Length: 177
Length: 278
Image 1 (cartoon, one colour):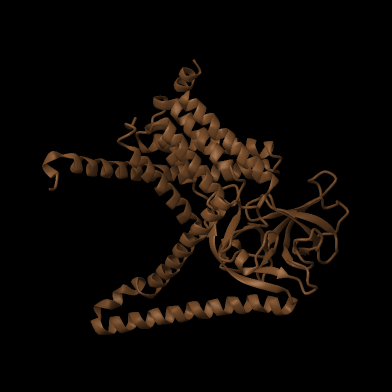
Image 2 (tube, helix red, strand yellow):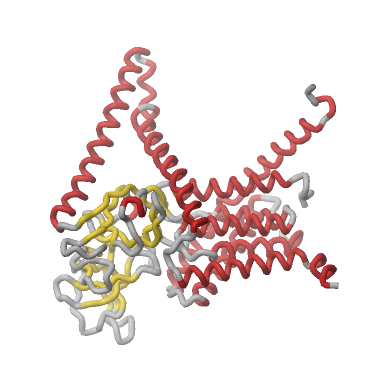
């Protein structure tokens, strides 16, 4: 787990990157499927960041996704917070060290995400066609799972860069007078 | 004691608080669908600025790709010629884009002339980044006279209706979204049903009686009932009919007239010829 106080800027940067991805994705021409990089970030945060900051970040990203999608406000914030908490609870029981395991974990979480959204739709009496909904979940879940190693690798690169910057500025020999 | 409990269960308490907050947000949103709070409006407005910027950069990049990089092999011939050719190509590309835009706008305007509706032309600046909602963001808002519930169309047919508006941008719920339902009528037989979204890029004609007369290829238009869509706007054409499916009703699928993957400009109907709002 990442040490909290020192790595606060990691999570801020991760949140900002998530927000930029949501805005950027919404500005691209329509694709036949919808990727969900936010879900990958949230699962990753649940695994490797302090739970409270991870949960707040998940809420913010979900809320922003709701605003950008024009869907039910709170739907994605609820789902993302739940997924982040679940990822935190599972902790070391799930392994996301190699590409295949990353994709499998993200796909499983996407199915859970679909289940949460479906339950919320039913709870708020929003009509959902089961078959077409399942089709969307499987299609978008598979696409997000395939893309997830790229996102996780980008997050790790960003973390390494920040760590390197941090070490460089705190090493006594590098202090500029 | 309570302090110790709170300290020990800090994560769970925050988790539950965020869940409750999300549920509250959903309840409020279900009740006041389309009304944006001041904070939401601020976020939507600032997002639309970024989206407009990205959309413009994308268009420029597309132009640069087709007009310059793609034909980079010509560079080797002559430096001067290359520069000149690139400039010409860029101008030609800009010209072509302008011609195409002009054509699209002309088509949109012909809709206005045909119908006599008062309309606002708007550019599509964003699409929904979430799987479960089919919405687009347009670059016109309440400052341009766009308001919640107004019908959004192109020359081809119905696009959707305005879901919410900030001062400079609006969210449009597409007719293919599962939350969208449009009172529709088969143009040839005048049989009525409700065109509902849900299937990817298809609509389903619900509550369509088994006795109703519908054939593949029949045009489906808005009935004018419901107060959002004016009468006679094209929704699409029937692509499949199945009388054995759907119980007391028959199953009919509609292929939308509008190609949603190629939407660039749309018209928001702000006023009908008889003076009623969109």
